[in-house]
Amino acid sequence: MVRVVFTNALERFVPCPPQQVQGKTVREALDAAFAVNPRVRGYILDEAGAVRHHVVIFADGQAITDRATLADQIQPNSEIYVMQALSGG
Image: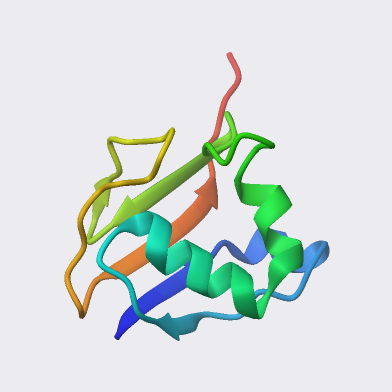
């Protein structure tokens, strides 16, 4: 099963413990995680379903390349980490 982990910073707003889900793409895995915890979706994706500007998603240690449709392929034992990106100057 795919392991989806959300940053601890989101715990201030909505409970989002790590989850074991199924999926062949990042989108499928996240949709499965959002089905269990729909409130976290709005913190991660915008109204069009794309990754929000200040959010970064890693699949198996690599930043995903498709931030619009999340079509990056994953393996059955993949690990997905979702966190807020740092910005500033």
